[in-house]
Image 1 (spheres, rainbow, N blue to C red):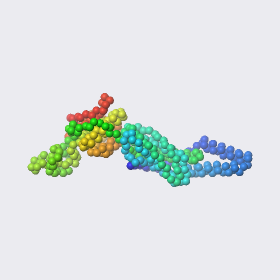
Image 2 (cartoon, rainbow, N blue to C red):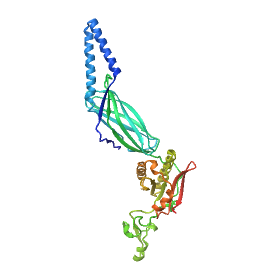
Image 3 (tube, rainbow, N blue to C red):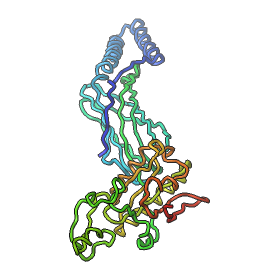
Image 4 (cartoon, rainbow, N blue to C red):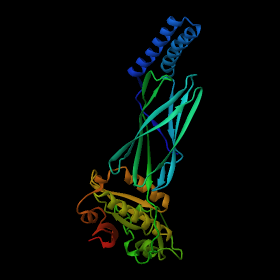
Amino acid sequence: MCKWRKSVKEPTYKLVWRPMRVIMYLLLVAMDIFMLLYLGNYFWCILLVLLVMMAILSVAGILMMRTTLTLELGAGWSRSDAGEVAPLEIRIGNPKWYPVLDSRIQFRIANTFYENESNVTVSMPIRMHGTSFLRVPLEFEDLGRFQISVDGCVFQDILGLVTCRWNVVRECEFFILPVAHETEQISTEEYLAGAAETEESKEKGNDFSEVSDIREYIPGDRIRDIHWKLSAKQDMLMVKERVAVAGSEMVILIHLSEDKRESEQILKTVYSLGKNMIDNRMPVCLLCWNENMFQFDEYRCGTMEEVGDAFCDLYRIPVSGHLGDNQNAYIKNCFPFLKTYLSVYREDGDVQVEMRENV
């Protein structure tokens, strides 16, 4: 569920008279007074009373209801695939007897990942003594983290004499993920050399106390998990169950580009590659450079849901914050125990997937 966060700022209201509408209405009243004086007919007297009462009630109604309106927005999703249509729901509550025939809600839709934004305005009536609903279908082709913010709502009284600017702020974020495209099945045996081999722990060295548990060898256990020193002392094979690294995982280094379309293709390739690996029961570790922290962000994924979570976290930093030169050199210092890794980058107009040695 997409959670909408209310702003800490209190809503403000600004009334603006519409001079042309007011002048036209006054001319209409003047014409009625002239006909009343000229003809002396009770019809024109009744019409004059109605015109005055309607103007008073119209303006009084907008003054009364403006502080009682409530605005809520939400969606039944917090992430979506690129190109998929998902509805955004707008709810405006009005407890008063006064309706609004037309209101205009102003949206600002910003993609914080690519650092661009656009403005959208939608119109809807506001019913009296109830809640009005409007569903806006949203479809996004670009990947990234989108923030929708409602900066305010503009509505007017029934006669159109006064316009009210309701400055109320609502914000929400959601994420657009790639669609895994069909590719040829990749043999995990071919890339098994790229599995992460960090020995016991890249934090404190090779002492077996860093593992979660030690147990006897069971046929089918990986050879790399055998604790050889302890096995020699016990005269039986002992297997380590590690906390930091549970066996093999494919390390994928993501090289994003300044060009949006190139980054889109790279991300789609990584997403499809991750799905292929997970379908073959091989977990993946996504690495993406964080220029602000001057380090690699690590995302270990064993399911596609975790891959989606990794992409959402990656989107929180603009693409400009993921760029960096000599990333292949940095990875040796940051991951000294890593043997090989899969590098995904763009060169000569095509996305390249290359297995590299960490030297």
